[in-house]
Length: 357
Image 1 (cartoon, helix red, strand yellow):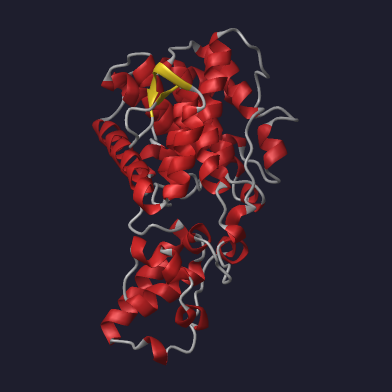
Image 2 (tube, rainbow, N blue to C red):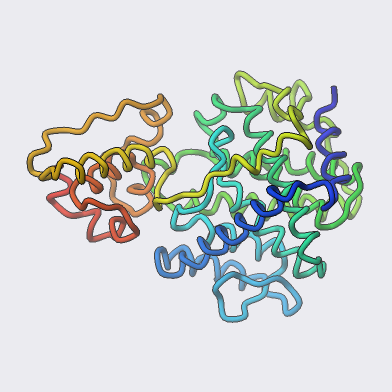
């Protein structure tokens, strides 16, 4: 079975009338959530926000697409999407599809918004493009997880396919064009998980670059560029290269009937999703029993292996490193009795009392 072709036909043929009302409403929430996350970057992580702005300005265009939260800055659509993807992830409050482990909004909303502006799309067309990209991204993610996550940042890699599908739909490519766009996306997909300890900027650059690659892939396909037509399922294709236990059946399972966008998770805390249940449990215990942090000898978190291998750094020195550290999140929740953006300020992260805990 040519799963890449099946996905391409799904994207090309998808119509607004095909979408259940719940899917339309969820897509709207994802747009609002992603834009809100991007706006928050300007106060919560101004360094990344200004990086996003300056890279967009390098490729400014008067008739281009807008950078969220900037004063009228417009850039070529791929670079506007790059900037907005960085902004959306900067404060680590963007949504997550748990089984695919993708911050999906930050890779499909930026290309949808950018091309909606430059291609003069109506709201319905924007929604359809976003849904098409979401369904592709998470299915590719589920097809390569969990072994994919050992080295690869799923938002960057699998998200590139979703961004390409969104862009291809926004550009009204036919099934052949979408298939070529997916092939071009697959050969550009990249993004390593090296940032989990250092908490550097690559985590937030990844969704931006996925959004950029998605638009570039669709634009190249519209110009007639060719690519591998079975990029996902080929013996030397994406699934086999990026997973030791690929599950190609996940690419098309329930396609068009089981809407994965309805499984999207919105974050309550501005931290890695794996920290949310431990944070809630910690806060519940502290508040219920009036626990004095000085009385806590240690906190034990029984969880799944990915938390141990990826999200358990205790020597945090940057804001992003703290956001992706479950031990930090639990410790600060126990001490402060809450967890908001204030708990991730540089001064709070470097509090000697917290480090002792």
